[in-house]
Image (cartoon, rainbow, N blue to C red):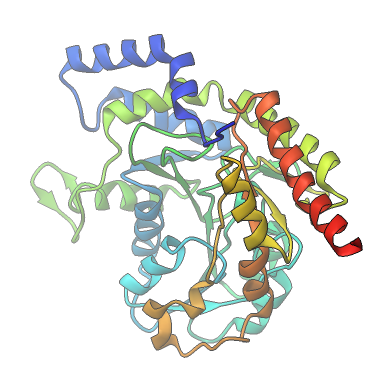
Length: 373
């Protein structure tokens, strides 16, 4: 059995009629940029998260970049974040001339260690970017308290966590801004690239909307340097359709995760979920010191797995100028050698999941037999 995921063909087949109708309506309207679909989607996603405003942009990376730019973070400033994340989180800081300052992770949840953030704050620190990795919220209550006490901005990187909650409040509803990616593999995805920034800050919203249209406040009047950075009308229309299914899809992910938990707990470290968190399992990530062998074995069985992420950012060549060395963030480094994401997708069938479970169990049981022999 070959298992590749996420299975977007299945998802889009189930929505084909709606998606084709949306395409036909956009084609007929002749409005492809900054039209009514985007305006409605911005309102709907902001309401879903629990914010006042949404600003649709080209990608989750652009959402992070424009958030920092709107806050005037740049040369001489420091931004604290995690080294155990996708590169976008850090590259936008560096592109603006600010300095990424890394903080180690909690070894159980893989999210930034909120307690350790305090020790990384300096007189140059302007912001903190917590990443809600794999679909589970970081310790937002402590992070918000620490940030408020030091007058820091908080930019939530919610690229993997739309629909997740912490203490009964949606991820994305906590920071000064929150940034979401709609890349095709995400829990809520468009048919291409897309992203959004959500906020309650009216001034930030106005700056962000200006920045995404060349710094323009009105046609041919430019207040500041800006960019061409809008979420397309067509993608907004597709996302409006998918948003209506998001909670259902996330529920299915949780069902799949629970089944994995029950079947694999004696073999690997299963995801550790904070009691105050509502995990949406963008990734179902196990941990084992036999990661590479297990991955190779599953690959031979036709099961695609993922490693997110195999080398922490503080050890990446692009960030060598920051001066970090191996051993600086041991929890992130250890995780990078042991994490493995198993197939999880709302359209993964029970039979397919059973196949994955059986093969993981087979791997460890064969190893146990060999060791006994």
